[in-house]
Structures are given as C-alpha cells and as structure tokens.
Length: 171
Image (cartoon, rainbow, N blue to C red; front, side, top):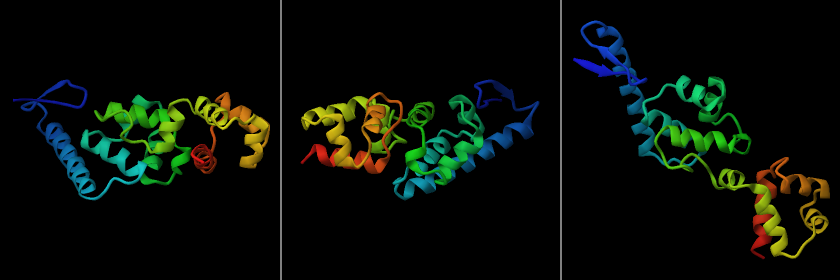
C-alpha cells in the first residue's frame, strides 16, 4: 500500500507506518477543524484564510514558505491579531490560489481594491468628480502629497479614507 504525502512523494506504508498514520491523523484533524469553521460564517479575512489552508490539509509551515512570509505572520493573519488593513493583499490572493480557492476568496473589498492598483482607482475617482489633487486632499483632510503618494502607489490609503473616497464617488 502506498500513500502520497504532502509533497506528492509516495511513502510505502509497510516501511513507515507511524509516519503515514501521523500525517493522516493531522490531515483529518485539519479537515475536522475546517468543517467546524464551515458550519459558521466565514466573515473575516482570518476565518477565510484559516478555512482555505485547513481544507487544503496544509500545516502553516508549507503555505508560509511558499508565500515568502514567516509562519508567525501567517499565525497572526489567521488568528485575527493583525488588523485586516495591514494584511498584504498579494499574500492573501496567493494563499487562496495555493489552497485551490478562487483568487479573491481570502480578501475583503479593501484588499481587492489594493490588489487591483489602488492608485489608478483613486485617480479615477478624483477625475470622475472633476477634482484636482489639492481639492480631493482638502475634502479628505489629508495633504496633497498624500494623495500623490496614493496615486503613484507609493503608499496605500487606509480603510477609513478608502471608504470616504468610495462614498465621495457615489455622491
């Protein structure tokens, strides 16, 4: 009997029965936890990220290594310790893809906004309103330099400002 391990290598059950059982038990535990999460709603980014990883049967070390982040950072993401606006949109998108989910599964609307070139979107909002950078900065209570930095993608607008920009756009 041969059982594939996480790296798609084959472990002969006869030679390594303890190792095979250990991995099977760990994967089963992850799936049970994922199913418990699934019975509730996946409202937060942390819940979605944890669900995606657990349903794929991965320990935290594997996706963290693939995503180029530390395991403790992934732990902070999944535990909801890190504020959602501080989570990197690119990491969330890549995590969803790695776990076999749709591209934006782990993202909230703000992360999608940041991932889809926030600077161009802020500029489009401003131009749709017929405002200059100075006028938009005055309306938002920030400096013109800040608006320039957002439009050039040097920095990203915080969630509160993004919500204001989205609100201004629809007035």
